[in-house]
Amino acid sequence: MMNPQRIFKKALKGVRHAATTTTTVLGNVASEIAGTSVLQPNSPQAMVKTALESANKSRLLARRLFYSFTPPGSDRLHVQDIARFFANPDEADAAFAIFDKDSNGDVSRDEIEMACMEIHREQLSIEHSMRDLDSAVGRLDNILMSLYFIIVILIFAVALEAQVATLITSAGTLVLGLSWLIGSSLAEVLTSIIFLFVKHPYDVGDRVTVNKSTYTVKEIRLLSTIFVDSNACLVQAPNTVLNGVFINNIRRSPQMSESFEFDVAYTTSFEQIERLRELMLSFLKVERRDYQPVFDVYVMDMPGQEKLTLKADIKYKSNWQQGTLKAQRRNKWICALKTSMAKLKIFGPDGDPSAHPAPTKYTQVPYEEVLRQEEAAKRAQHPSNSSSMSELHIPKSDWTFADQNSAIVDDSQDVFGERDQVSDTVGGRERRQIAHALVILLAIHDESARDAGSSSGPTPAAPSRHAHGGDDAGTVGLRATNGGD
Image 1 (tube, rainbow, N blue to C red):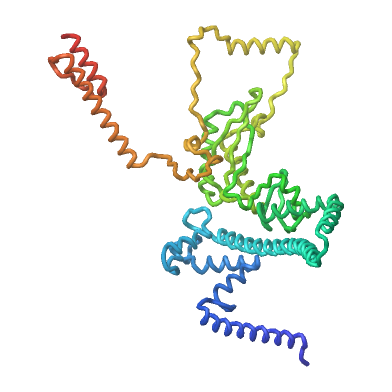
Image 2 (image 1 turned 180 degrees about the vertical axis):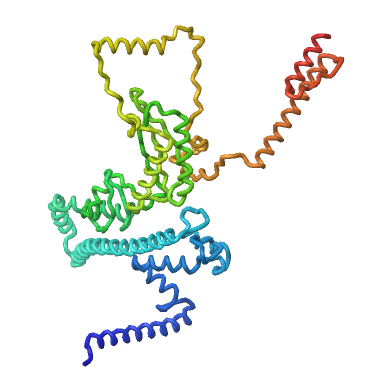
């Protein structure tokens, strides 16, 4: 006995195959006429577009790309591996830059998956934004059509030779009577139109911060916007209210950073802080796919000389559109900081948490007497400084705990992209120019010295220039000779 369900599946499969074949044939004919790929479901463009419509298929597409172009035995993909499939190197570099977000010259499978997922989310965001804006435009069209019908009625009334003055007076009275009822609604509609179509601060899928709360845009309407908060709760906000507040669009932001403050013991030496900076820079260079190689320490405060409050910036290689990815990178950075501090024995204000407690003191004499003896011992170890003020020295400190270029170009104020133009070292060409300038200055100095000697009279013997005396030694010798004459 035949199974009806199996027969139905086989028939459905045959219909699907016939539809695909028919579409392919029509696509080939259309492609011959138009000269482009049209209606070809088996073409690479159509297959990639179909794969990007699903999150699971996007990940499978990323893995297919990685394993298809990566050489055997390698876990990284380079631009040379795909260059032969493009017409020129510029196209290959442009395609490779889509996946190489950190610009380090190679990409891993995770990077390709993240890039494909980002394109998938971008495509969904565009589709939903277009749908919501189309819905808002439809409602706006209904409002304008209502106004259009009112104007048409007035025109017909004038065409029927009605008294214009009476008609205008009646219409004005009606509008004035309804102004208290529809005035606020019309103002809200006008404000929402300007907010959505002129300002347009976000799209569907954007992660935004409003009044120190983070939301994800779910739906855009004409008069309101639907958000989703971190607890998956839907939040509806009127566009008139959003028009008057600051909106931080995280998705449209470039590489972002955040500050992290931590307290250390007051006895922490500057050498330990500098060593901590070196260890963290080594970690950031290894994890260059997630972070920028910058770790500057700021000494914020030392309240009551009990502790040092330090601050460092976590500079990510991307924005915070993906909250889970940002949380993972933040946890990794903090764990690396904790490990580095433990390795360097940098403790908090309470000291070493694993240290043994101090012994308990028991005395057979009055405790006040013991305290007086301890105070006397401390004064003996640290006598008062009775020397003169001339023996005091100005404290010197060369500790900056920061990159030298940070004082030249501040990242928070670099709106012109000049950070990459600043170099840590002087190149060979610059060194040659500096050396050439020094030679010219020395020649001018020697010529000035000779002119001064000739104006004072002949000298018995030319002064000798010592190896370490330089021009100053020659000038001093010349003056001594002239004085002797």
